[in-house]
Image (tube, rainbow, N blue to C red):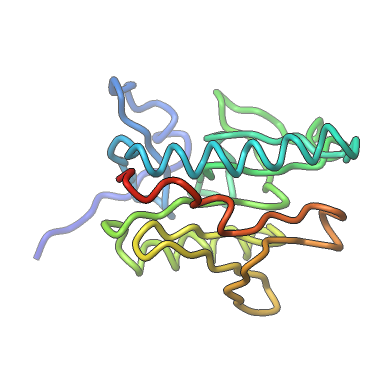
Length: 183
């Protein structure tokens, strides 16, 4: 049976950079992720666009980031594809070599059919256990979104978080529209 060597957060930060590779730390396990597909990038970009337009129109107290890494626990750090963080909370998030100590208010993950279900479930649980209000998980095949909150799971046709992000409404169809031939 193969064994996995666990690393601490400090050991993770000391790992040498690998060109073109993205990493996350999953409770001591180093996860290396392949390059994103064109569809992944398109979905990520559209979510980011909808969120930034909403933020600029409303002046909402949020920063919107892509691929920004957060330390969710002692030996866990994750970089959601898109996330929203309250501007008022951000200055308190200590940054250690590019990783912020804290949690995003909303995490968006764009998932492919190659992402193992157990790993996805674990990542979502880590966000929620660390204090993230909601995780929007975009599934590329079949194309749909599942929203995870501490209170439960939904599969809405319109994405919204009225208590957290008043006025933000993103039709799921608008994210995937025109991307039928992109993979």
